[in-house]
Each structure stands twice: as structure tokens, then as C-alpha cells.
Image (cartoon, rainbow, N blue to C red):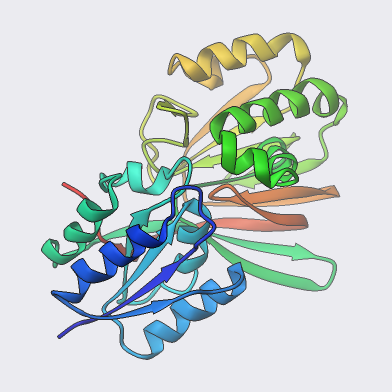
Length: 306
């Protein structure tokens, strides 16, 4: 009998004790199941690493995108599959991969889908002073503007969990209107023979960058192959209405002055002076003096929907 480890976040916005019991009962009918309750993101990653070392076939992240991100850190590059029981506010990863929003249906999917898909991920290697850290992004990553938005949104966790996308939109408008237009290009981005001084780079490698409520947000209409990078040279307030219009109506952001879309990117490096904020999967990674983003093909097994 295959071993499955369920790593749950009990403070996720849609989590309940009853839903966890339902999930455990459904999985227990097919697998040998263990439940873990990490007390921090680092403990969630450590739990998934331990599950791999103990030959678990599947590790289930029960929570929001943050829990999925931290659990996946221990699974990239292994043969242990990631499964998801969505219990957060936006649940971007679950929506991207057709995983049912109802916890009982998501649990049954795990038992009836014995052949997970193997997908690529993006690896961020970040340097800050003499320290280097490595992170894996499951659906998107970026440096600059969106990472600053994540930082502002995370500073008010109650509104983040209570209002979700509305809170992020309010945070984005606040950063975009108040502070970011004064930021001058200070990040040197390089991929292949392209180099650009900019304030922001957003990296999309799924068909959707993220969601605003039910609206899918894309950086470009072209499918990433394997990654597309949206480069913002500088944010100007007068362009914000056009940016919002293009984003919400699925128009190409690269059509806006000051933006460039770099297609078919496999690796990108950056240097920042002063340091720049970085995020992966909506999780703030702090600030970095420089680093790189590399595409890792077929690096993660994940249980997906139809």
C-alpha cells in the first residue's frame, strides 16, 4: 500500500477540522496515510523532505498557495508527487491544474489518478551579501513591483485572508500610485543577447500568471515556451489605467510603452543596486543583490485534474 503524507495549514482561510477529517477518511481507504501539522513554512518544507526520505509516494498540501509552495520545495527533483487539497483564498495552483475546489472531490481525485503529470518549475538562486539561497516557483515569480505588492499585502494578514484578491488589488494600487513611480531603473536583466535596465521583471511559465478573483491574469497572449518575462523599464502613473485595462481584458501588456515581453526564455540573470524585492508563487523571498531564474524541465510530479 502506498504511503501518503498530508501536510495541513489549519489557519488557511477555507480550512476546517471537519474538512480535514473528511480528507483523511477518503485517503485512508486507499493509502497508508499520515497527517502532519507544521508550525511554520520552514517546518512544512522540512516535513516534505522527510516524507521523500521515508519513501512517501505522494505528499498532500492542504491549504492555500503558500502551503503548496512550501511543501513543493521538498519535492522538486524527486519522484514523490505533489497533491493539493485547496483550502486557501485564491488557490491559483489548484485552479491551474484542474483540481476540484471541494475538498472531498479533491481527495477522491488523489485516489483515482495513479499517474501524476511531470511538469517544469522555475528555480530562483538569490544572492544577498555573502548568502545564497535557492527557491522553486510552481506557477510564477517576479522581482520588483509585484514583490513589493506581496510585501505590503502580507503586512496585513487579516485583510489578506478576509478579502483575498480585493486586498491584493488595493495593495497593488497603493504601491503603484504612491511609491513605485519614483523608483528609477536599478536592476540589470540579462538573457541571451538581451540586456535591460529596469525596475521590474515578471516571469510567467504557465498559461496564467495569477488570478484576480475569477479573472485569469496573463502577461502575454502567447503561451510561455518555456518562460516569458515581462520587463518594466519604469512605472509611470499615467499608464496605470492602461495597464489595468490590458490586464483585465487579456490584452498583451507588452503593447504598453515602457514594457517589453521577452519570449522563449530558459534562463535570466539580474543584478540590483539597491537590492530588489523578490517573490515566488506569491510568497515574499526578501530582497536580493542579484541572482538568476532557470527553467527546470520535468522537475515536479503533480496530481492534476482532467
